[in-house]
View (cartoon, rainbow, N blue to C red):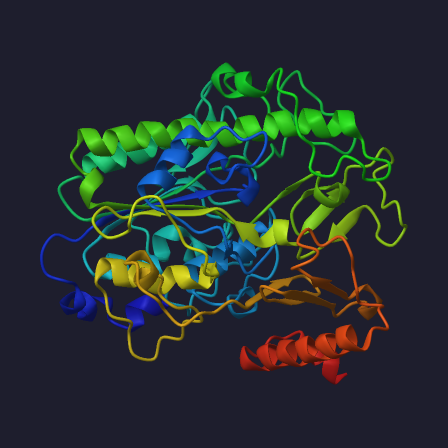
Length: 476
């Protein structure tokens, strides 16, 4: 692995004196930013996440730089854009692809600096070759699943090298139990535990006795405690007037999806209680996020960058797209992000500045007191100044990638270039159209055309800066 070549133990000296904080990094799967009750979104019921936000800092303008699982996770752990990581699409079952092992990942540096590093839950950055496994990429212990697929009950997990079936147990509870076991085990030394939930990802297999309607997906079975709140709730639909919307299907899926989010929230409460019980709560940084955003009815879609139609015929009412709608909509790349750092992050603070997954890597290093190795290329900037209540150079521009799509997004504008079909390019004025309903790409307005040209130039500069392979399509 690349980290070994750098001699990670040389960085031990860079650690701060005194007791180093533990880090609990919780990553949901497919959880939209609009699920948090602390941000007053309808249908939400997340009391423990809301409490975490009240005790820490909430970042409402946090973004992934990819729109599906594997690329986003690769960016998060490497500090580089998906096109730089070797993981540009979902690592599917049977695929031999995985994270570029020449990259130095942040768990490696923390492990080399004396932290006990543990991954519980989903990896999804390579499952066919051992050099892609988490144990060879900075995690001393791994108990979870290497691949994408799992289910809400009866999960099969790779427990420190041995596959184990948890009969009759719910996946969110099992993963939480494991994380709590490792917290207890390593409570007397500095640790980093990455807890990567399966929830609220839909099941990839139909549970026994339940088959969703065509075009839909199931999150069942789940505990009654997670389902109860939404059973009789009068759901607020995000886009109720979308042409041909299958309202019945949407409501059924929304109830299950929100219940799955609640399974994380409920288990977060268990973990926070344990930290307090073990007197670790004051010296543990808790980070909560999701691997990317999600849609549940927005734009008449469900899913993420590979959006799927929620219409009665499962088709695009305008006939432009087929069964899927590739996108970099805000709801696909905006993520929930909460950081609780007692004694540093001012409780109850909402930080308006734009941050991305690329900022996580340098932030983890600075929290742990580890200097960035010479020659290590990172694309992001540490969030620690923001966590300390100070300023950093504002970076309100987001660059994101998915399939043939690339986008540049500022607070005011968003430009999406489709390198497969430029007739599908998009430009939105976010100040007047924050939900991205009105594509202005075909506008003859001189000001909009000028802005589009400026954003195109900005996008092109970014592609060259990171040597994005997609620029070869321009040069043909």
